[in-house]
Length: 329
Image 1 (cartoon, one colour):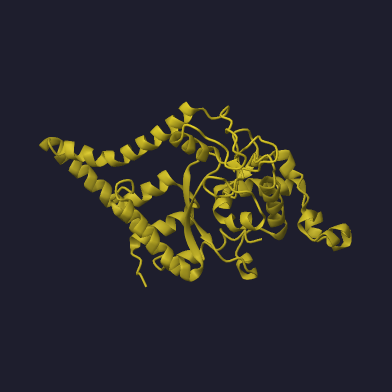
Image 2: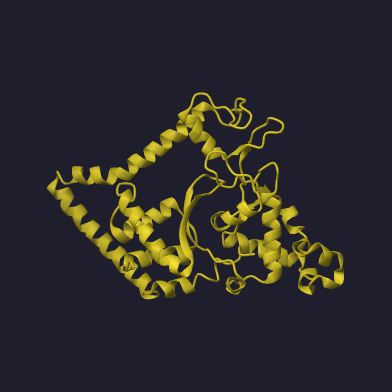
């Protein structure tokens, strides 16, 4: 069994206390804790994640990464892999709130247009009775009073809470979409409910571009399509064999996307070459050395302050049960 250090605990604590984080934020925390840039030491970064997951597996948790289907950015989060009745006791949401959430998820995931969202009006008009058996819903006496009495104001409040907790999100157009926590935690639910997957990455295509050919069910995430176009001059649909329409994504946009990825990798390696240039000047190196030492001391102190509250991995994970069980319907 691998013994986790305070550095491992700090990474776990950051994801549990803050919720899922964008890759840039998580990499920044990793750099502050270890003093290394994940962009230049990917093997070491992956080793940390592997060691963390080996320990988390004993309590049925897992550190996962996925792409936000609305902006294409990679995110990291800790999820609960257990979906039994006991795990449901840890959520802070009530039974009607969970039924309301499930109704929204179903409405978004089952949208044949794969828009990845519904309007706020449609969300507030989700019927909780639809979340119980058809026989019970037809008999009003069998519908729980909590479902019948779940008011519009309670729905609005619940909607705000779900957005704040990252189970849902608000799109730029003001619609309701899936939050990054749902995208991380609902992978098995998407598969079990036959949500069509992206032809490129095989993840659920909740928000994706559809092949316009009648009878063709192929869908591809926009960020997957950009990457594909940057690698190929001729893109044909793998389902029907017809050319993929490029009205929304042009070849130049795809090339720009690839160039942005290369620039981000270059910037990740930049600090190392910058330090080499700075060492050529004795005065600059002295000043930079003192400031770096101050930053290292500050980050180390902050890390120690964080880990004092949960030095044991099992103690840290106990606090996450209330956060990650809403999706275990």
